[in-house]
Length: 151
Image 1 (cartoon, rainbow, N blue to C red):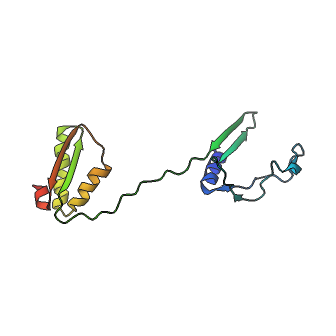
Image 2 (image 1 turned 180 degrees about the horizontal axis):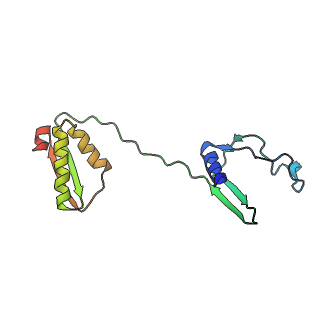
Image 3 (image 1 turned 120 degrees about the vertical axis):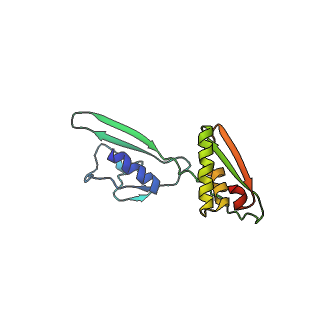
């Protein structure tokens, strides 16, 4: 497990880690051909036209052997929320969604209390549109001012 974690972290960082515990390379490999070499110190992972791949082997004392090939998956890009400057008199929609009519009413009540307590109504609307799951019971409240949304 430690070898897999080490290799995943190396792939993320783009560094080929040094081989450990290799004082004398095996004589059964033609090292002079240049096809393979022992990595004696950490180096940058070569940029090629395919994903990074590495093999991790484990040889147990009882004769149990395991080998896994790991392939790098690029980090997903997180969409950015565009900056917005709402117009002063623009209506603000609150898109509510819940699993039951009772939960929908409770959500509306909590939003009313939050906005009455000073939470920005436009931020509430933006969050409801961009971060909430859609359930089968829905309602939309539209208002141009705090008092109108609370009502």
